[in-house]
Length: 334
View 1: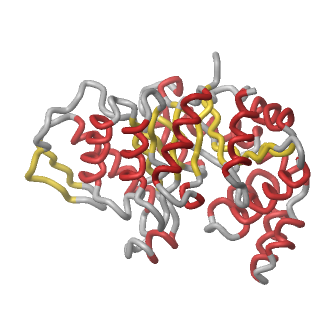
View 2: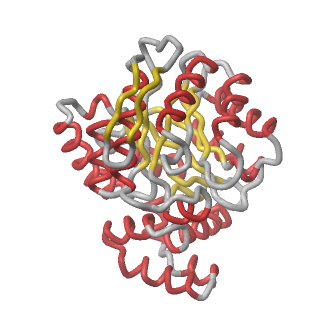
């Protein structure tokens, strides 16, 4: 089976929505399957990808990832169904628990029982998809009394879940249509797919019904492969050591606790150079794809051959300009 390629845009690195849409069109021309971008405290990704959807024709559109701490479940369902209409059925709704910092310091919500909140959000979105009156009495949400007042398509948007830990991935396997992990080694990804399979079994379904699409940070350069590696090393080290608690914990549990401790110690001193220096070559190559175009393709192929992977999501790293990103996209497709 051919494994698709998706693109994750660095929306914060684009000055305009026109620029994001232009990169999405390039990805479409190069044969990428889907395009998405992360949402934190910058642009709203629903509006952003409504623009992208209007300016593209075939490429799939996803959100990475909308937080149930920031939008009500019924609003998320309305969003998904409207984006489905706006994009001619190309939309997938990306959800995830996000992080304590985003939930509490941006959305103003206590980061309480995140997995339960995510589970109930998926339940309610599915209830809206059924087109009847919403009536949900959960531990987190108590919603009822109104009904969705538009016709619901026979093929409502699939739901993808961003998850790292075993219970969260089990939840994705049981209730979602896709799993979008990141910062896994190929072996770590293969191990976690066992949790996805267990969740699918609990839901009386097969993992064949779940689109598995890991995000791999990529940077390819013909003229400066060493520079591409160092830029990637800095980005991965920052994600491991400074970007919330969960990425570092996940990498540590994959057998690299000593590295994570060292990277985090450097972050305590806000020493980003020491953070990067603490990330060894072997782990960099296990988590990312960087260097020459040939090396990038080889590393992506390693992830693509993990049994159960349906797509590989190409993400960029800090410091890349538009030409660097274009070179990497062209390298990926060979």
